[in-house]
Length: 347
Image (cartoon, rainbow, N blue to C red):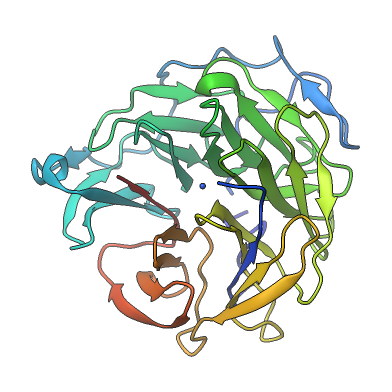
């Protein structure tokens, strides 16, 4: 089984779907859920069932060379982080001039989703190791590691109201279905939440009010689902989209006005696009097309103001697009990528 064979190998068309929120942005896992687990919208608290978390621990990992960070990183206005699923490295660039100022290597075996907290610290999900690492902005050594995550973690998001860290997991039939692990204040042992319709979670994103949105599929990976976990609640509310169709779930992020939801697409049936909707009801009111001629395969995009940063896994590059205009990339980074997946900017 390849790292990305569960969900990504067969999908060559990417789109991005945007939904209005209330406010507010596979290699097999070593960890199996040892606490109670059930589908059906119920919260599962696995306290005591997972290894200890919240500190840096040592795992068996390949030797990927030393991490490095240029002094220029501290001088940069913003830093762009891009994960490479196959090489196990995370590239770091000054933004918007796109000069590489660092590479994070030592603690990765399948880095996937990336998210940022209010302190501008970076969290990076480690797909193969079922863990998440925290770095200070511009730092080359992790300051924390969280274990206790269900199998095949993919994406993450930090609640701006509490500092809670949510991590989506795809899951497997042998390790239990997909779930979302939420670490209170990004520490300790997570509480695990499931949804009756979502067998495999892909990505999640908080809005400024602390509501969590997530996407995923049924067990057969044939039907897309989108759901909200309202702040303070224990049960997901499923949202039905109208006026468009998402082929396969992608990134979820607050863009300042809307919740953006990526569509990895299925074959040539779906066109690259961004759709904007009216909220929890899911009415699509606007489409922002991407140029599909370059075989776009943008999974873990990052929206930064009027720009969408799109790691293209099939092309091994990172494109920059106007947002919400879309179209062709205004510029492209082409060197040093190996199946790029996640991206984020630390301001």
